[in-house]
Picture 1 (cartoon, rainbow, N blue to C red):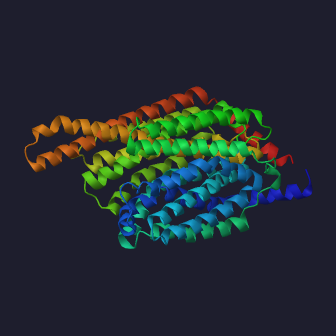
Picture 2 (picture 1 turned 90 degrees about the horizontal axis):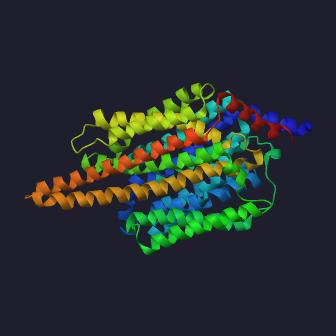
Picture 3 (picture 1 turned 90 degrees about the vertical axis):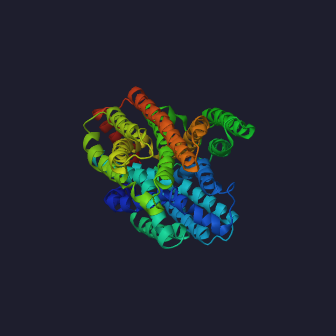
Length: 502
């Protein structure tokens, strides 16, 4: 190993904890933006004259661009260098946020959201892969990924709070503008602090067929599941999008198995540990994203809470997430096999879901929702930290970006499926309930009560399906993830070898 390479590796190691601050800040921006705009949407819709049929594009445009481009973003990070991709992603995200805040038409906002998603697809895998190549010691890696996991998991709930506060006390445009100072601060800090060894880059030529096929496949799948939410699963367009996505995905796998420098080396996903993590994360996110949606509407529509009050109601989940990912997870990660830690986390989250499934119109927040959210956050906090670490453990540094991108792919596709699937279940159950009980309601107040009862019944039924997803996720990690305490530490050491061997 040359003296220059040794100095670069030493610099990267010395600055790793300072770098973590800016990486965590960038991750918070990306995660916040997935939810912060949701609460501001009614105000923005009214001011910009967006129709009810088009308002979904404020959310869908972001998800489509992020989900469709994230694999490409991970590969670009490997090729350009993660630091460069990270800084460019932050600057682009800030510019897209400025465009969204200044939007004068719905089309302008949709375009800004798509640009945010595109730059987020570059930023997010670069951030996670930087952690993968900078933290190689088992105990330090556990702490770093614990902090990262807490932000990745709790940021969505914080988005509801911040979005409600900004909309209520300032203006909906600040849900965009708030990203700009944070993004600039994170980009400046990263530029001066992060020292990424150039030897960890993957300089092989870009797999253009893989880029095209993966982008089209993920875009079709994400859009298909979003389309199903509003048009139904039997709609011809829904079936065409989902079917086309599956065909393109198969073509992508065949292509990746044959090309010399694949966009997604199949060794990244065929490893049983990483494959188990990706699959279980997708299943867990299916459960969580749908539940976020139900709880937001339950608190505001059924319980009559204001947007900012609804946001604060998610704080117990954030607290549970922080405890699970920064206290419990790091302490147990080097002592307990990863599959047991993750499996236990999924089951704790499922117990929180079980409490939510019992909610009724007159349920108390303190006795039902609060403990449910605390358990949900605690369980997912215990799970996210080892999941984020295992998703990149043992991969060659040149594959770190694409391995990190697969984590984001699991979350984006799982989120799209969860929102569409659980919302469809809830809506159909609500419709059946109201149809069966509305005849017994003679007065208008009684009819309104039946409507609310139907809504809550639909939510609780869908949450039972979410519980099932978490149980399946538990079975997946117990059967596929076979890294034990000693094996995991060995994997961490192996992850460091290719980085220091150049």
